[in-house]
Image (cartoon, rainbow, N blue to C red):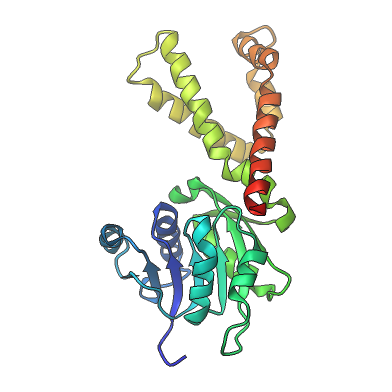
Length: 271
């Protein structure tokens, strides 16, 4: 390629794309001056220029060594084709439901004979605060080193797990959709707290700290069942509350939610 290539092009400057770039820079994975963010919205480009100092923000795809595709699923194939034409050697997509096979078909073999390595990732929204869980995989035609590269980028915003692509619909249903389950539980707990008379303006902060503290304790101790047992005195208040969860079938509801999300992921991938 005659034109100088950036180290990394991030296609899509939405909340997740911006969070990933900020994390990559903070961790020193790629220097800001070596990154270009491609964003179609003029208003968003102006915001990104302020949010990511030193990073080039562009309306058009430019030559780059690698690309991180952070656009909506229907646009991924066209973007993968465009970044290949622009000269990338490897690409990772974070779009839900878009398989490596679809991306591979889009990149093909570059006109100049380059082989483009293809990886797929499924981050979740806590990545926006540096506490994400991201699953990654690559297709069989890619050099295994593409996973080292993808992990090096994505661990800047949380933990990274290498998962077989056949399980991506399942991991999407758990860690991808999981934050919404937690937020839904928080909403319910907030409303329940208000219904028993706690101050309406103070409850959201109390519930947020409850969830944060409990999650931190779980991360440190690593045994959800043991922690539940430790806080549950026989015949006490916690046992009474958990008894209602059991009576109403909480475990079954959670399992049904995960299965529904997994099945919908399969449908989207097949479509």
